Amino acid sequence: MSKYLVLIFEDDVRTKEEAGETVSADYQAFMQRRGSSLINGAGLEPPSTATSIRRDGAGGFSVTDGPFAESKETLAGYYLIEAADLDEALEIAKDIPAGVGVEVRPVRVGG
Amino acid sequence: MPPAASPEVAAAVADAHRREWAFVLAATVRTAGDIDTAEEAVQDAYASALSTWGQRGIPENPGAWLTVTARRRALDVRRRAVTAQRTLPKLLEPEEYLPDDLVSDEEEITDDRLRLIFTCCHPALSSGAQVALTLRLLCGLSTTDVARAFLLPEATMAARITRAKKKIAAAHIPYRVPAASELRERLDGVLSVVYLVYTTGHTAPSGENLMRRDLAERGLELARMLRVLLPDDGDVAGLLALVLLTDARSGARLNEHRELVLMENQDRSKWDRSAITEGVSLLREALTRRPRGRFALMAAIAAVHDESKSWSDTDWQEILGLYDLLQDRWPSPVVQLNRAIALGFAVGYAEGLAELDALGAEPQLARYPYLAAARADFLTRLGRFDDARVAFEEALILTENDTERRYLQTRLSGLSG
View 1 (cartoon, rainbow over the protein chains, first blue to last red):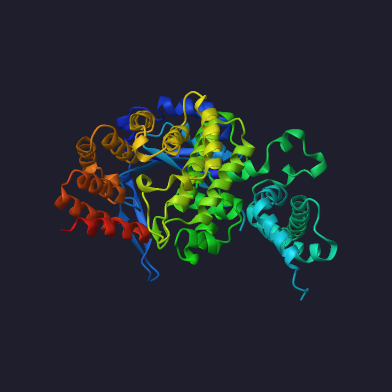
View 2 (cartoon, one colour):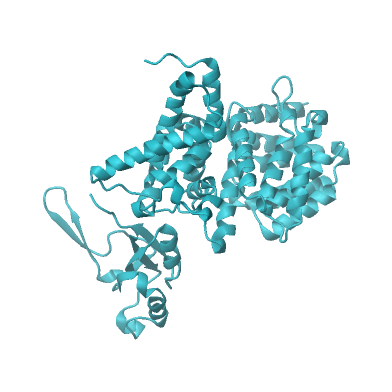
């Protein structure tokens, strides 16, 4: 079995208060369907709450408000999943009720 | 240094390379567990064939000899790797590997070459990488030859192939024929890759030569291989029909001065009758399937041309109807362009031109030279020479194939006066 990190992208992320509930019904249904493949996962607060830290090249850090990479889509959450191979991982990933889409990245094994 | 192989042995090895490479490599991948180890083992096996066959004679079944030799080498490499306790990215977990005599019948029924081609054409790889891997791993082309085929620097192509192989290993792209539920979609991807190999050879996108016959022949061989592996599939029959029916005309596309001859002026006695016969029979088979496939419809269009006695005998209404069917299910600007040309010959040049003009705003055709070339042709036929001149000049700017450029230049010069 191999591990994959699935990054979930949305147009915008609503805060917990705006959403009115912690986990939407769609996600609850997904987690019930695919529970045996999910190692862990979490939803994220909106990018306006993000803080980025870059090395400044002189041994220090530059700390800025906002996400690391500016993009139209927002990183809204993730799952760490386990699958037999990429085909199975993609099948699980397609099942995630993501608004925009997801990115599937194999987790590096060993050195 | 071993003595140089006799010409007879060298020819036998070269022949086995061309015929058996995909078979030997595909069978070895399962033993090796990853593509790189398998490739090295197969290369070693071909190298040792040169010396061994010289000493002991050419084996009765060269493919089987090469497979056994390559698999043995791959096993050696794996044992060494296991001993060294190294963690290698693998296509198969070690416990999944079974010695040959334990392999179940079901395993043997599916030809390894099918697994290999589905891995090479996996949609998680870029389309450029899919084509490169297919040529490298299924056709056995060297990286140098693959780079030359696409007129790219060798270092660029080598990097592309390495990156793709790394992704196959790191992301665990499976070495497997897809499940029935996704087979249609995945097979369509494979067929598109094979067709792209063929068309890139049939009319080279750029460069000195109109055709790259080596590449076109590889495309034909791949289509034939798929037909052997999936003999009951209508889309596979449609693709092989399309390639055969298109390739049948290749001998008439250049005159003795190596100038482009359009189908209208081709010497039809130079068309390959046996390819047409084979293609038409495959097409009949493909057309019995419902729904009709994309390649079968394109092959049907090619067949109308191939079976017409002359340009003036061409049944343009039939061709127009086939383009309508294509546009209906697989709409694309290129299909619309070809439909507009068929309309021009079926109904009238002015009507065809109007359709072509309407495509001028299509962003996907903005750099496509055949739109300007088609407009130039219809404008010439309508006697609108000044407009035709502008269209030919535009086509010349966009065309990167030298033979096509010379043809357009000749047509443009013919307009003056």
